[in-house]
Image (cartoon, rainbow, N blue to C red; front, top):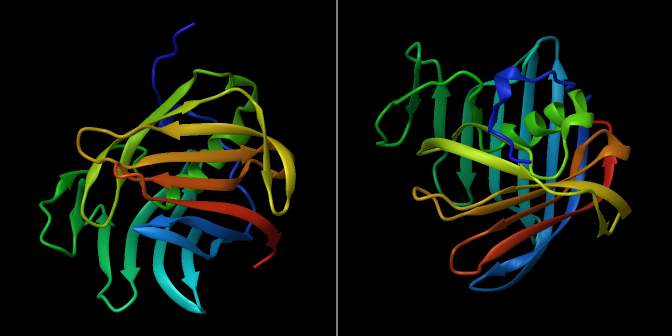
Length: 225
């Protein structure tokens, strides 16, 4: 059975409570790479802050930060910030000016679409959508929305796979895998494994480049922030 893309704005959502997820990090960036990562998710009133830290040798090599609000359709980002070690941060702003996405780098403005997410908020928005209507997530179903990075805005589509077991340092769990394939605009492949038994949180995150380089985040444990 074929499924048409479903916009995030049409979903019933169940937004996760505040949590700090810790990961071991494996991958290849020109050469084999190991480190650690942390995904922090915090809520205060109608606002949220999410942050992803990529670490090696005690240094924050990459930091993504997303801030915005939480409503009946889930996350509504207002600002996304990307910071690499030794470089200036680069930001994207939602609705400044109204109806637009603007960038601190020399990137042209883009029209802001309903249900838009940034490349970090997407992790918890997908968790919210999965948790809100879990019975609908059969293999082959897709969800699509505008995705915004520090220098781009494009449309991402995620396709669900069948429930499958994953083994991570924190245990072995049945998980729903969501996959975003490369597009004409961007060569990254994104694979996310969400686990129903822990509130549909992403216990594995894998990002693969067209040249074969990849980062694989493997969950080790969770804490309250």
